[in-house]
Image (cartoon, rainbow, N blue to C red; front, top):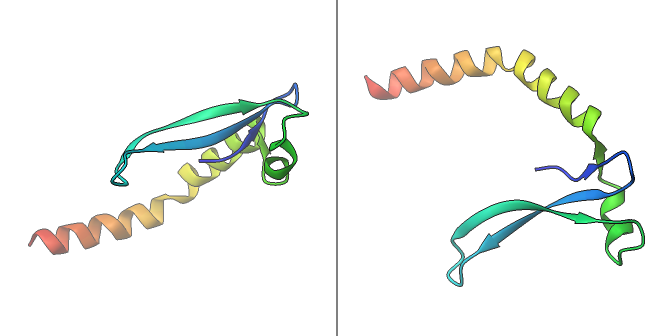
Length: 79
């Protein structure tokens, strides 16, 4: 999950909720507005929505070789 910077400057920061024994309950985003005490800490690693979409497109495009390698490995393990 990435920190996403919206057009109005708001940041969407990933946050996970875990149980007392450490099991993952869920993932979500919380929004931080400029001026929030944690805003500057997260801003440095934030990407815009457009940058995020481009990363996803690039990952899907460049994933073919990795997917073929994984499927070959998986077939070998099932034999």
